[in-house]
Image (cartoon, helix red, strand yellow):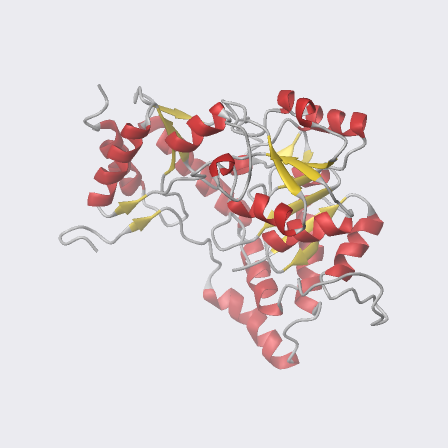
Amino acid sequence: MVPGNPSPIYVTQPSLAPLEELNRYLQHIWSTGVMTHNGPLVQQLERELADYLGLDDVVCVVNGTAALQLAIRALDIAGEVITTPFTFIATANIIAWERCIPVFVDIDPDTWNIDAAQIEARITDKTAAILPVHVFSNPSDIESIEAIAKKHRLPVIYDAAHAMAVNYRGRSILSRGDVNCVSFHATKLFNTGEGGACIAQNTEVAARIRRMRFFGFNENKEIVDDGMNGKMTEISAGLGLANLAHLNAVIRNRRYKYELYQALLRNCEYVTFQKFQPDEYNYSYMPIIFDTTAQLLDTMRKLNAENIFPRRYFYPSLHNVKLFESPFLPVAERIATTVLCLPLYDQLADSDIERICNTINKSSLAD
């Protein structure tokens, strides 16, 4: 803690149900002794999530990265996978981990999602799939992407790690593509501590993911497929069930705080915002773009001096990571070097948002 300053304000904190509500689920676990192996709370969470999202099926897994891995395996993907460089390292890492090759396409300067107009030029006879990311929950150019995928007979796996509870054109965004992979990590809008899920549109693919998350066992305990230990625990499911009851309130609260930031920064000439449709976004992050990296770094230094700790997402752009070979991608480079996520979470006070915005507005580099 910086001497003389209030308690530190970090970029996020988990949204948590009251402890007594979680305790009811923990008491159930302690009474049954069932901790894992597709237990009753995991099954209940899958049903309640499917009902909440208006989906036929949800397969809960241990984390969002495992969800991506299972999706790639379940669809038998082998070869090049077209994706975005402006994402968390797990997106590209798991492609490479599954012995595929990530092929990066530059991003749209307004939405920060993969630029669908540039995808087709990167398709070769080695292309095996397209893996877009809904960045900060902002829907990708779904129609264009799926038209390209259909033309070239390619599956689409959406990294929807940020996109829980986003509706797109009147339906859950998780109802599109071949498989959607969502994260329930502690930093996400809806969390199970650690966790995630796969949503497959094909029932056979969903059944295969359900087998593969438990070493390839079927319902008769016969090993019939490839597999791994990708199961969600009962404790994680219990936390998820408790948190799900409060999700609508969390979204409303996040949207209010996001819009407060926008109002307070509306006259800051060197800051801009991601472009999205207001009702197709879940307000789980508060990203802003500076005109220059110098402005970003100066603002970070001043906020840190006040015990406020924003974070750079997603820096560096993955086309610059030595693990991967990629041409220079100018838009991703510019966005990655000038984007900053400001603190946003349920308990963040309006007065703290005002203090953060005052610091940004008073930056000495504004001129």
